[in-house]
Image 1 (cartoon, one colour):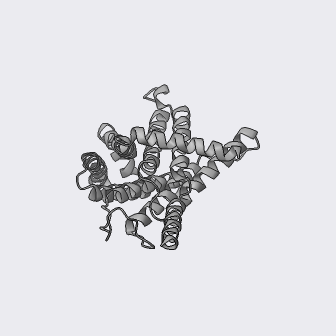
Image 2: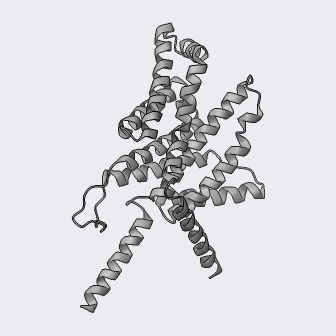
Image 3: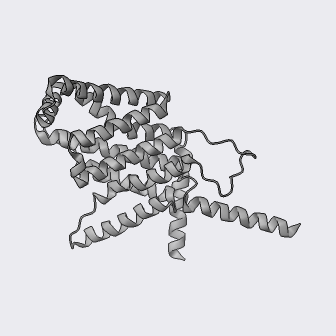
Length: 282
């Protein structure tokens, strides 16, 4: 009973947070989500020569193609961020950022680094949630009444986004025998499973936001490292990439898990139950 009371109180806190922030939470979520693309696009401008030389040396593609690669990253990322923040052609912007993310995964050899690959996939999950959020709901026969047994592409995109998003937390698990590490792994695993299957989703996602933000500030404090050191850029990129995953989780908090989730099935079960009661009363 005590555990049920604790869970109910936690859900009440999450609902209260959502009521207070519902006006601007989606905007904050979008800003966080595109932050890594915004930062990387700006970095392409200020480190033009370094990025071009790296691509030219790695792929032996020549000066012109390497410059085109950097220019494509710069314009594609900054342009996509502007479109998303202005709410214009959001779907096209998401597809453009998907393309940039895929291109970078190959160009920077992320494909062979499991940790960074999982983080890029998590970032792709955030974009998938943003793409789902930009799609309008199909018109139903009765306004305000959920459709029975029908799943739109948007709902499957939300499912895929949730599953990909939690890959970020797989990179944070530490396999050592200390009590704190074991406890963190157990709690973190439970939360990411809840988000993936869509059960108690808003509460689990909000808890992961708080946890991930604390871990991000503690481990990726790039502002504490001098700008001339290579670790500064590494931590900075990691920081904003993590902020993008936080943005994806905030979208889940703001918009819910979607139709393909246990939370939604629970709503439909209650709807069926009350409909049966109504029929019996007749």
